[in-house]
Every structure is written in C-alpha cells, then in structure tokens.
Image 1 (spheres, rainbow, N blue to C red):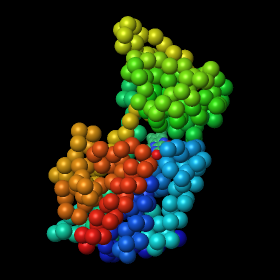
Image 2: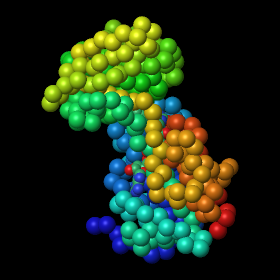
Image 3: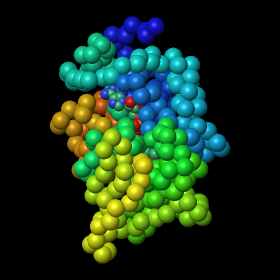
Image 4: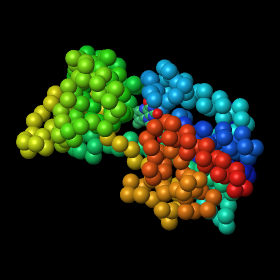
Length: 304
Ligand SMILES: Cc1cc2nc3c(=O)[nH]c(=O)nc-3n(C[C@H](O)[C@H](O)[C@H](O)COP(=O)(O)OP(=O)(O)OC[C@H]3O[C@@H](n4cnc5c(N)ncnc54)[C@H](O)[C@@H]3O)c2cc1C
C-alpha cells in the first residue's frame, strides 16, 4: 500500500533513475528527511538493459538488478519513496512545493532524466509498437531470425544492436557520420560479427509499412540517392532529450533543454538542483549520474 505523503521534508528528489535513487540515499545518509518521487518508470533508462557496462565494480549486472539494489539502499537509508508522477513544482519564497501531493521542501533535486530522441520521420509515430521500438532488450525477441535495423552510432545504439545480433538474422546499423561515437570495444565486437552491417553517411527518411514495418527509405548523403532497405523492425537510438518541464521557465537551460548548474549541481533557482541526464553537460554514463547525485545531495546538506 502506498505510504501517505509527509507534508514537509528537507529534500525532495524527483525521478528515481540511478541519479535520483543515489541522490536520495545520500541525502538521507546525511541525516536529511528525504522524499523520492517517481512516475512509475522506476530505474529510468537503465532498467531494461540486459548488461550494464563500464561501471567500476559491476561485472555482469542487468539494469533491473542494479535498480533493485539501488532502491534497496535508498529504502534502507530511510528515504520516503512515493510512486507517482509529479506534474507541478512551485516556488514560494525559498520553499518548493508539489501541489500534486502537498509535499514541500527547501531543497529539490530534479533527477527527471531524459527521453530517447525520436527520428521524426513519416511512419514512425504510426508504427511505434508495431516494429518501431526503443528497447531491443524488451522487443528484440519478437524479431528472432528476421532482418532489423538500428539507427545511431553511440554506446547505447551499439549495446542494443549487439543484443539484437544474438537474436536476429541480420542487423543493419544506420549512421549519419563516417565514424561511430561508441567506445571502440563495442565497435570492434560489432564489426567482428558476420550478421552486422553498416550504412555510413546515411539517413532514414521514412519508415514504410502498413500494420507493421516493411522497410526503410534511406538517403545516401554521399551520392544523394535513395534506396529501400527491407526490415521487420527499426530501433532508433539517436540521443536524449532532457526532461526538465517541471523547472521554472526562467531557469537557464542549454539548447537541448538541459538545466544549467553550478559546481554543486544547483540551478540558477535557489534550492533547485539538477542532476544526471536532466542537466546540461551530463557526461552520458551511469558513473557521471552517480557523481552528480553525491555532489547535489552533499551540496543540499551543507546549505541547510
Ligand atoms: C540504450 C542505453 C544504454 C545505456 N547503457 C549504459 C551502460 O551500459 N553503462 C552506463 O554507464 N550508462 C549507460 N547508459 C546511460 C545511462 O543510462 C544514463 O546516464 C543514466 O541512466 C541517466 O540516469 P538519470 O537518473 O539521470 O535519468 P533516467 O534514467 O532518465 O531516470 C529519470 C527517472 O525520472 C522519472 N521521471 C521523469 N519525470 C518525472 C516526473 N515528472 N515525476 C516523477 N518521475 C519522473 C523517470 O520515470 C525515470 O525513472 C545507457 C543509456 C541508454 C539510452
């Protein structure tokens, strides 16, 4: 049964991805009464990953296991975890309140993360959930022994493509540049597989299908020509859009909407911190989000 919200806390953390869970646990360990709200996607971007890479001390952990461990740590530190979306954040004379549930605090840590960017091409919206997916670990099994495509060239795109290569007949990676941004180990692993193919300098112009994905209309940036690639599914991983709508419109943001912060992770709105994928200049990895979390929680503690 959900716990009744306490009306006043010292710190409220919004978003229980890795950044939010770590910040809430750290604030509580600093002795601050801390509430943590999440809109239901507990764990955020990391949750569905079959294997989390690049975090010291973690050898072969799934995203779900890591999320369970981190939530357990937060609860053990006496964080008041309350499932439920926060739709409004109001500043009143140095105090922040959440009209949704009557909670308030002098310090708020915004850890609302980011949404995966979409391609914005014809066919994408209509075929989402019917061949267009942004979770290979959830949906890859539906396309076993079929041909699929992954769009993007970063770590996330390669991680998801490598998983699909274990299930699907062929995986074509579509990249706009001549060089992937992903770490070299992922790129080498992918290049060594016989069923991975690469289309450099290529853009997806349309996702074609009626009831399911049949093909992609591709544009070759070098030749200026177009061609059709037959696939049963396409997985776009072309970056992130920070989710910062809760912050006051006046708060300084970068061009992508990420909140600008100082060295303590505080925004230009007194008492409002932003960490992880919600802030401008997020390093992109779990370890960066965790470092932000510690900095913000300790900054909040020292300033109260
Ligand atoms: C495909 C992919 C693979 C990756 N693989 C790795 C990897 O192997 N290793 C690594 O180090 N990093 C990896 N990363 C990067 C890593 O996932 C991110 O750096 C990290 O998850 C960011 O965490 P976050 O807590 O800032 O944001 P998020 O994970 O986005 O979490 C934000 C949370 O806030 C919640 N929320 C949002 N708005 C509200 C609201 N209004 N009210 C309540 N709750 C709200 C969301 O539901 C979510 O739970 C990967 C990223 C992607 C996309």
